[in-house]
Length: 296
Image (cartoon, rainbow, N blue to C red):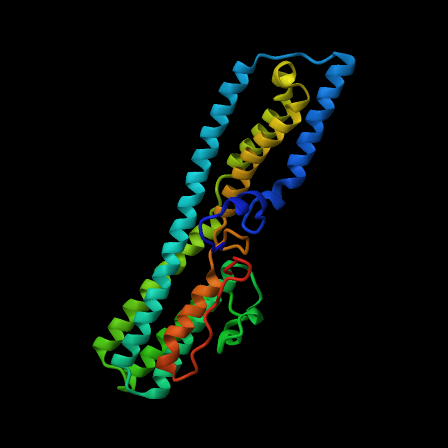
C-alpha cells in the first residue's frame, strides 16, 4: 500500500512510485503511435473518414460511467478486506488478553498465543499464495503440509483449549470465551477467502478494456479537422485517464496482492506480533515502515 502525504506540484508531474504510469506506459505509447500514424495517413493519402465528435462525446460519457461503476465495486472489495483484517487484528489482541485472564499455566498460555500468531501469518501467506517458509514465525512450518494451514492452526488452538479444560487448567467459562474468539477469527478468515476466491466478473474487465481500446483507436477520426497533429497528444491523455483508471480498479479488486495498492498484510501481522510480545515475554519487534512510500 502506498503511504505518502498529499502530493506536491512536483509529485504531480514527476512521481512514479504509487503512480499507474509504469503499468500503462507501453499501451499509451502504442495508442499514441497509432494515432500519429492515422494523422499521417490522412494527411498524405486522404483515405480515412472524418467523423462527427458528438458521437464520441456520448461514447466517452458512457465509458466513464461504466469505469466509475467498476471502480466502486473494486473499492468496496478492497475496503471490506481491510475491515476483515482489522477485525482479525482486534480478535488476536483480545484472544491474547483472554488467554492471560483464563489460562494460569504459563506453558499453555504461551502455546495458545503462539498458535494464534501462526494462524495470522498462515492466513496471510495463503491469501498471497506464498510458501510457508516466507513467514519466519514459530510454529508455521508445523502446518505447511495441511490442506488448509490457517484452519489447521485454529483446530490446534481448539485442541489445546479442550485439553486444558479436561485437565482442569481452563474452566468452562474460559473455554467458552476462547472458543467464541476463535470462531470470530474463523469468520473473518472465511470472509477474506470469499473475496480472494470470487473476483469481479471477467466480463467487466473484458468489456472495459475492449471499449477503451476501441474508443482510443477511433478517436483520431473525430479529431483530424480540429486538432491536426495535436491529435496524438489528446489520444495519449484520454488513454492515460481511461486505462489508468481501469488498471487502478484491477489492483483494488485484488486487495491481498503485493501490488502498490494491495493491503499491507505484512505490516498488520507485525503489529500483531508487537501486541503479543508483552504476553509472550519476548523482545518487541521493530515496526514495519514504508520503504520508498510502499508499505507491504
